[in-house]
Amino acid sequence: MIQSAIISSPLGPIYLEGSPLGIRRLSLAEADVSGPLTREIPPLLTAGVQQLEAYLAGRLMDFDLRFDFSGAPEFHVEIWKMVRLIPYGRTRTYTDIAEVTGHPQASRAVGHAIGQNPLPILIPCHRVIGKDGSLTGYLYGLEMKRWLLSLESPGQFMKQANLVDALTAGE
Image 1 (cartoon, rainbow, N blue to C red):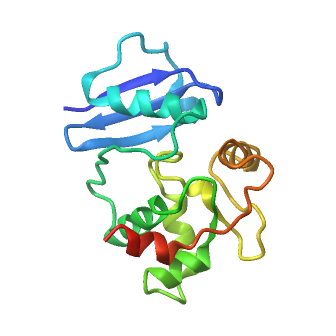
Image 2 (image 1 turned 90 degrees about the horizontal axis):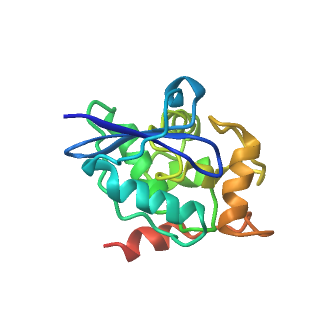
Image 3 (image 1 turned 135 degrees about the vertical axis):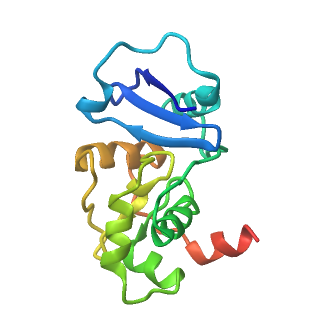
C-alpha cells in the first residue's frame, strides 16, 4: 500500500510518498506537487512530515526515519547511506564519498547516484559539493542547495565533516 501527501513548506509544496517499508520519495517538482495540500497526513507519512517540518523550521538536525529503497541499484543505496552520515551543517565532496565507500576512481558514478536520490533533504545530498568547494548540481537548483546549507550552518556551510569518523562512530 502506497500513501502520499502534499505539504506546504518554505521551499514550496513538497510531495511525499511512502510504503510500509518507509518513505520512498520526496519531490519538489511542479509535476509531482500539483494538487491540493494534504489536510490529513496518512499514517505511513506522519513521522516524515513532522520531522521534515521541524528540520525546515531549524528545530531538527537528524532524521530518524525508515526508507524504502525497493528497486534501487545496490551501488546507489550504498552511496545514499553514506550521504546520510554527513553531519548536519557539514559538507563532503563526491571524491570523499567515492574514497570512503571503497570506489576511489568512481566520483562520477557517485555523482550520478547522488543525482538519482529519491529523498532529497531527508538524504542530504545538498551537503555534497565539488572538489574545489564549489556548489555543484542539485536537482532543484543551486539556490535551493545554498538555502538548505545556510539553514544548517548560516555563513559557514563550507566546513568539512570527517565522514570516516562519522562512519566509525556509528558502528
